Image (cartoon, helix red, strand yellow):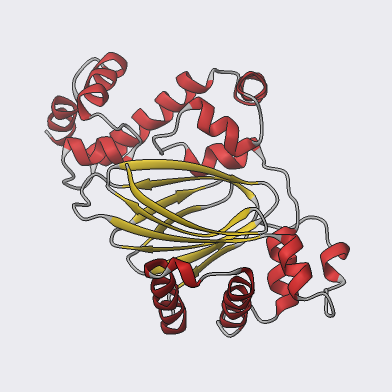
Length: 279
């Protein structure tokens, strides 16, 4: 659950946010017309999109392009998680760089989503400077927010992930179309609902089911269950992961439901399957 949330607004839009989250918690967000810088402190974070399947460690950050995302904070985390979000709106960046607007912003139309993980002392110092203003929100105004955005952009340019402001803006705002097969291949072992998978593909649920049937000649629920059970059988045959660990690994949030599903498909529960295979 979200225990606390503070947001600084710029010209009517939320620009910088701080969230305190108590795991376990899942959150979905859609950035159709903006990039987004996210910094996480306190626990491992799973971040999913149509092309991204990332595990962010404590005090790591990611720079995201526009798109649909799901974030998940694991059950085993015992402490609150701090999430700092900086929204990077095209109109704000155009305003800040109006005398040096990159021509490449209009030139290139399709490229991959940005998948940049940052772990940098300068970024950490930037986050610490934001914490001061979260503790003293009365000091915030539009001029100061513009300065903080400029500061973040300059810091990103100095990392190995962005060589110039042209590259940064170009990668943030180049539109793309999600590929259904790509999404399924990337997330077939995640605990995502049909509705969430449809969102990652940019489709309605009905369109997603129709397109899925045309591609795989099966329903999403049936196909994904088969793939998860196949993966579970591989894990049961090798290694010594517990049944619960295998359950979470292949995308079942409930080990008991995993056991029932496995038995229904294979005729025996996973523990017996492992014993039979090993013997």
